[in-house]
Image (cartoon, rainbow, N blue to C red; front, top):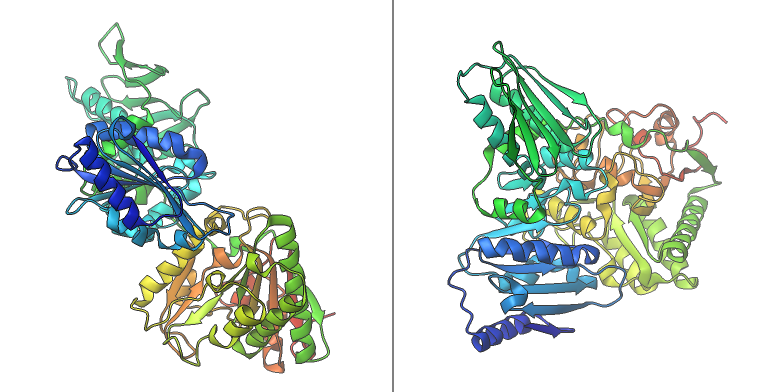
Length: 568
C-alpha cells in the first residue's frame, strides 16, 4: 500500500503512518533500527530495492530522503508505504525542496523509532565528513559507498582524515568473503607463516588498497600489488610460504579457485560477487564501531594534501589598476555582477562568496545596488561568506551585518539564499558552527570542491571576493597558522587568530579555490609588498594570498598605492 502526499509536513506523515498501521494491523515491536537512506532521484528505485531487501533480514523503519534541486518550491512531498511495498517494515520517502532541504535532521526526527539505533546510508556520493553531516551526526552507524563517487580514491582520503567510530564503507564489506576465505586457507595444515603476499588486481581500486593494508597489518609481511587488468577489481591473492604458495584466484563472478601446496587438484569455492543487498545486510548486522576498518582505512589512505595544489595549474593572475579606492569598489562590483549574470543565464544559479573589511563591505553594498538596477534574477543568487568572526549576532565585528540589508532589501536576494555563518549566541560551539556551515555548502553541491582537480565545470562558486591583510592573509587563513592547513573540510574553526577576535570560521583552501572567478580587493600602500609577492610563487603557508586562484580568472583590483610594488 502506498499513500502519496504533496506539500505536507512530517506531522502529517506520522499521522498517516499510524493510520495505515492500524488499517493493516502492522506493529513496530519487531523493528531493530531506523534505516535512513540519502539518495538522489536517479538512484531512488535501486536504493529502495536494496533497503527493502535488507529489511527482510533486519526489520527496520526505512526513511528515504531524496533532496530536490533546481526548484523554487519550499515544500515537502512524501510517500508512505506499508505491507508488500515496504519489505519487513514501513518505508517513508521524503522529497524536501528549497529551504526544507537545509533541515533534514529536524525533518526525520519525528519519524524515528523510539529507543532504536539510527543507521544512515548514502547510496550515491558520500558527504565530506559523514559524522558531521546533519543526518550522520544523529546516527550510530554511517555507511558510505566510495565507488558511487567520480573519484573514489579522493573520497577515501577524505573519509580517512575525517574518520569517526561508526563510519564504514561498502568497499570494506566487498572484501568480507575474501578475508574469510584467506583466513581459512591460512589455517590449513601444515600451518606456515607467510613471508610475503602478492595481490593481483587493478591498482587504483579501493578494494585492492584496503586488502593490501589489511594483509600488511594482519601478517606484518611485505605486500606487493601487481597491476592487472581484468573483469574484477581484485583478481588473486598469493600467500608466499616456505613450503609453497597458497593462491586464491577469482575465475568467474561465482567461483574462486584455491591452490595449496601439496595438493595436485585445485579446490573450487563458490564465492559470488556480492550484491548491494548482501553488502547493506552485512552492515546492518552490527551496530558497534568497526575498529578494524578504521585502522585499515586510516593507514591505507593517509591524507597528506599539499594545499598549494588547489591553486596550481590555473590561469595566472591579472591586474586592474584603478585611480582610487572608490573606483576600485565600482569596478570590482561591476565585474562581480557581470559574472553573476553570466552564471544565472548559463547555469540557472549563481554562488558568490563575500569578504569582510571596509572595502569588502562597500563592494557588497554596491553589488546589491547594481543587482537592484539590472535585470539579473536575484532569486537565483546565493550569497556566502569567506570567513566570519565568531561573535554575537548583533556584534559590529561581524562581516555579514553591514551588508545584509543591501543584499536582501536592496538587491532582492531571498533571505534564505543568504548563508551567514553561525554566531556565538546561536547555541553552537565553534567547531560545531564550522561543521554546520560545511553541511550547508554540501547540501547545495559544494563537495565538488574536494575533487583532485576543480575545473570550470566543477567549480562551486562563480565569484569569490577576497581582501588581503597586511600580513598577506585571506579570509581567516593566516600565515603559518596551525588551523590554516585543513584541506579536508569545507569550513574550519580558527582559534588564536593573530587579529581580534580570536575565534573565527573560515572557508578552507579547496573551497576558496573552487571558484570560476577570484577577485582580490586591495587598497593601501601598507599592502603593496605582499600584493607584489602574491603574484609570484604559490606559498599558502607564508603568503596565503598567493594560494587562491580561479579556474577561469584571478583578478586583482588595486589602487595606485597597493599596486606600487608590482612590476608592469
